[in-house]
Image (cartoon, rainbow, N blue to C red):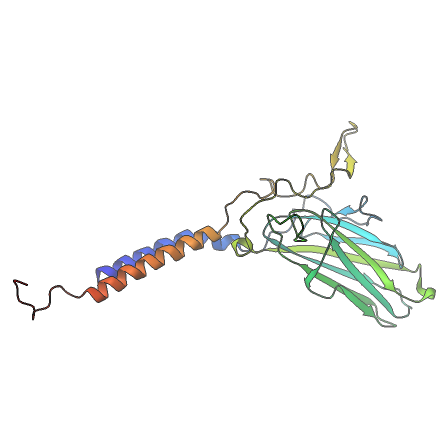
Length: 266
């Protein structure tokens, strides 16, 4: 009975300790409503329109244009980029593609999702999606792992008839992410997020000062860094459970004491 009470108390304490870790794995909140959603797209990496996670960005363009957006992604997040292209009333077969690049402008492969889709003649819309790999806090210099910082979205048509070139289209783009947590943690951290310092914008107050693009993005506490992650909680839970299992096994196999058949003087 004593062992049962000890195990019950230990499991209750571990459940209370694991509560915050489980909460950290919930999907990331939507962007605050204090900023209006973008209604245009950039035409290059340097002029990419900033989009917060959770915002529904819209833009107008023409078939054949390259449309660019940028968004921040932090350690432990798995971003999902979705785009809906509203096609003109009359058009031929078209193939659209969405590409995602990191802060070093390296193209990131989609873990899954339809990043390239073909719209048949008469289709009103075409929907694209790209789910990236989980953003890591550290990577080898020769690796192509997604790292925290700025990410760029490029949308364009890659195959269409010459008669459809230049026709107007509308685009809806949304970026969301899921917090993976300690399941994707690595032993290391990036010194600085991959935020381009060459792309700058002037302050709205007319002071003439400039700040790096996406410098105001991210959480109030800044970019994630350091060695801590919720996997340490689960590692501790595993260690405590292993210790309790060892104590319980010893108590069960030890018995009640000296066997009655053994003489007292032995």
